[in-house]
Length: 253
Ligand SMILES: C[S@@+](CC[C@H](N)C(=O)[O-])C[C@H]1O[C@@H](n2cnc3c(N)ncnc32)[C@H](O)[C@@H]1O
Image (tube, rainbow, N blue to C red):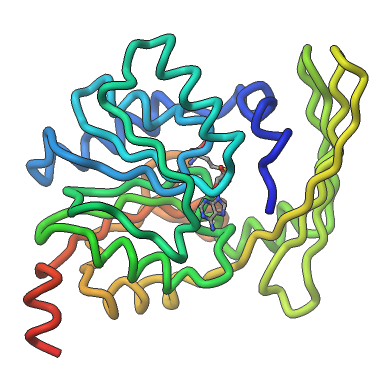
């Protein structure tokens, strides 16, 4: 379990992330599929940057994360933006997802799906609650990034409130990167340590998983430029469309 105390510093360390560009791409894909309102899930919403942009655009958002601290940050931001009426917060593991009804679409961004040891389960769960014609929009770090960028490298991040040492260890079989974070809170002087893994999923495995659970992978592009994929793309961005209702799926075996 991670993203505990780190949740409170996540936005400071992630300052360079371009959520505006991400939002524009996501919104463009939703509009292109005729999804201009209704219920969307943000799977592994983190501090809710994208969730709240989508709520502001008029979607009813279910913000799901296993970290209570992340959800506290989302709640505080939603309060400030007076968006709580458009938001349901759920503390759940994406591998055991249980929603109260169907969703028109789901987003999952900034590598949340790489955190899952059983990606196939999370895709099955998203499919189970997704309406026919609904879209699953998500990004994932590429095997290239795990191998060549994270690898066994250590990075440091400095913000006014805190600094962070981010240490990666690529497992020998290349299937996951172990990540250890050491954060120093400048205000309180506290230091804390968190550990988690990012799992490596090749494109073929992701596509097979989507198809197994009733999605068509409509497009995959570079998750940073939103242009064509290259050999050195560090992030994929996927748009998958659900082909049938859950009932139709069960009837067809
Ligand atoms: C890198 S952050 C991305 C957050 C957010 N989507 C964004 O765009 O900034 C990954 C998030 O996934 C959550 N997460 C990791 N594993 C999870 C799981 N099994 N179930 C639910 N949330 C999970 C973490 O708590 C964290 O908030």
